[in-house]
Image (cartoon, rainbow, N blue to C red; front, side, top):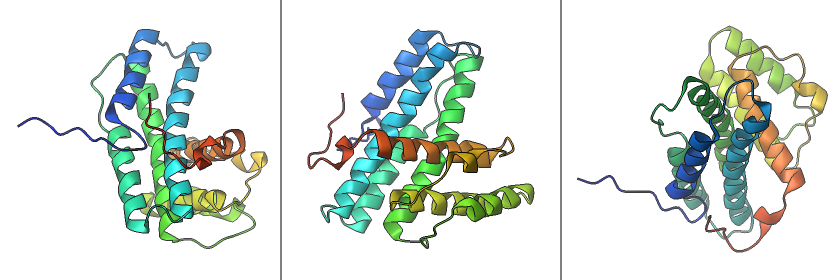
Length: 199
């Protein structure tokens, strides 16, 4: 039986595969920062798709259930295991996927309204770091989701809040949150009425 492809109005498997093909063709090596931009663009493309879903939900054009379903479909596309390409590329794709986990959790938390608005997000970052030390990954992701949901609802996070964060999942998931923040500042096209069908 042939595997059914997900055709999502906001993001498609073909679109993700196009990025994977570009990454393959780039011949990326870990010390090549210039070519590394492709992974940033790849992540931003997913983030913008998620923001479009949220914008539709905020305008009451998508129900809560439908918005969650759309986010889940994008998540399924982006987090699917990729066939090995090269050690350096595989590592960067995995890092991008881990970062996107923070994005998806934030979007779901925002749509579900499962967070409290807070002026300072620093305490949530500290709680996430503490939870990671205790190896409580559910609590880590829960805190990250709340941070992201606050950003999506108009909250602000300072550059210095991203400083002095130890290497690990908190750092990688916060990278996804930073992508949300950057996309919300830099690109307002996701608020347009018509969903982007993708390239």
